[in-house]
Image 1 (cartoon, helix red, strand yellow):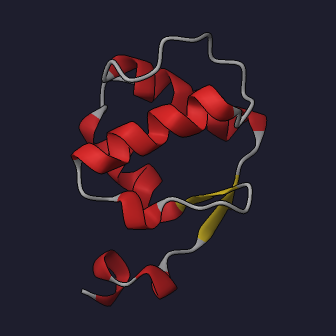
Image 2 (image 1 turned 180 degrees about the vertical axis):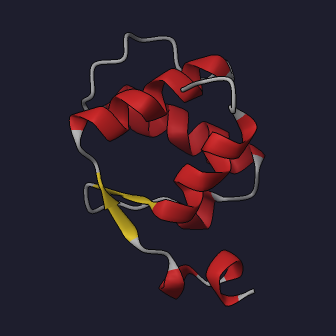
Length: 84
């Protein structure tokens, strides 16, 4: 429960271009991101991630420090297993 429900146990993940490209491809697969997978954690990517997170009640996992929530990434990967 602590790992999945408490934000304090949510390890931040560096938003490297490879990680962000993966996120962008997955967000495109769930129809919330329409851009090219650039690898940049830009405003369209942040908005798409926030839109998706809101649909799953995960908005508390959004970060504003240039990093990504490890739990949020796991959840996104769980709903897009076809993207590898």
